Image (tube, rainbow, N blue to C red; front, side, top):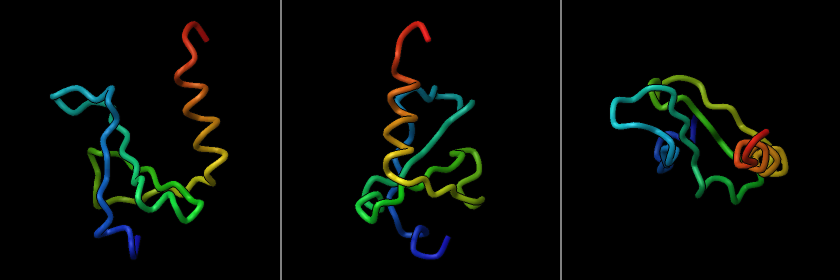
Length: 67
C-alpha cells in the first residue's frame, strides 16, 4: 500500500460498534483521482483503488432506497 500506510481512513457510517461488514475509505488520497477502499477488519490487508467516477457510481447505487 506504500503511501496509504499513513493516510487517514474513515469507516463507513453504517458500521456497527461490533465490527461486522465494514468498509473504510481514504478521502485525502482521493484527490489523486483514485479512491482507496479496504476492509476495516483487515487494515493491514490490501486496498482496492477505484477511479473516482467508479466510487461515485458505487455511492449512488448503495444510497438508492429500494433498489
